[in-house]
Amino acid sequence: MKIMVINPNSSKEMTHSIREVLEKIKRPDTELTVTCPEKGPIEISSAYDETLAAFYMMDIIRKANKEGYDAVIVACFSDPGLVPAKEISDILVVGIQEASMHVASTLGYKFSILTPGPKRIPSKYNDAWRNKLPYNLASVRPLGLTVTETEAKPDLAQQRILDVAKQAVEEDNAEVIVLGCAGMVGYAEKAAAELGVVVIDPTSTAFKFTEALVDLGLSHSKRALFAKPSDKEYR
Image (tube, rainbow, N blue to C red; front, side, top):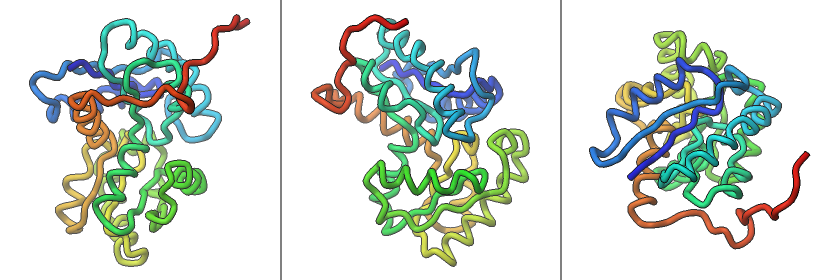
């Protein structure tokens, strides 16, 4: 099995952190590549950033298709470019937000999403609707950190995750916590142990979800929603 994980921002440091965590949980027979675009935003914290990141990611998706990969994972909690990525890809494409939200909905009555900054709260509610899970979402709470800070300040990020997740559990009745950023990779285990609730690391969850889908021989349907774009000249 051959899986490519794309960090859609251009941060080499975050890409390295993702690789470190996934190398520990991948199956021995899984060949893992973790990469990021050379150009694009250093972090994704707006719809504009998502659009730029998606543009630079498309060539990497095409490359994975040509080089014999079985699946591609988009490792950003905004799932930038996920629909066009599935359109151009003949192999499975999984978004970490899409996968982790659906898994969370099976593990408890309500889940809360922890997002880095407050400006992203509305977009996460929109994403819950887009993923057909608005009634499973208890709340979206911000950590008050940038995406870059969640990576660069691990002690602070871990403490904020504990504090904000506790609020979501006690005040919003969340039964499952979803860490809403690939930059929060590696923080779930301690939070789950201290809070006594399920805490989902979306990147790890999406990776194991993808391994299972590849084993089952399943991929996205190409019949309509993710059908190949028609041939045309682009200028």
